[in-house]
Length: 293
Image 1: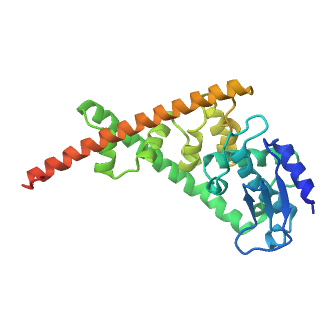
Image 2 (image 1 turned 90 degrees about the horizontal axis):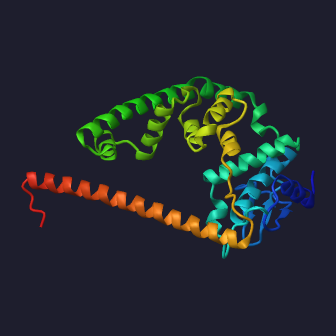
């Protein structure tokens, strides 16, 4: 079993951090977690007495998992993250940036032949059978349904544009659709993504720049790597900006302005949508003889 410093050296070899990190094998067991990250101390705790942590593959995967939190909070040596102080909620977050970074690190570890090439459940025949059923039968069905919905949404988009209706309002009122998923299905239909990969994988592919999307789709269809792992190859988890302080400050300011402008536009569109709905409700109430005052 590797000692604490050997694990740190291994993690740093995958991606150099902006700030140092410490690994502590607690020598204890926990019923709740196999490991955790303490952002204020910049420390990874590994409960190496847990039954699942007795194999080095488990231990290293958990170390990589917690190290991903460290990189997302403090950044890499090439791209440090300027924060006044770390936030606990960030250390527990498992969003798309976390997933992209985590799978990127796992991929690098696999390339180093460091003993984490395969997931621990890969050798389980029962779970493998379930995975085969899902990937071989259910995901293609799910993907086919998503693309058919996308085709119907495309027809609705054409009709709404022709008749002067608001597509988003129609999706919500007439169909009860989730707007975010409906837009993804519409995009997947327009881009002709393969139903074989399923809708969740389509969502990952739609985050990848268009010029790389077909290459990424082929990698997902082959089944050699997970959609998130493929996404991480084409979608860097960190901003790549100028390394000089002046350039970094200018880029950060530009990024902040762009983000605020997008948020302003989103809120304006949302307000316009709410106003339109309010007018409809007022008209319905008036038609029912209800005085709105």
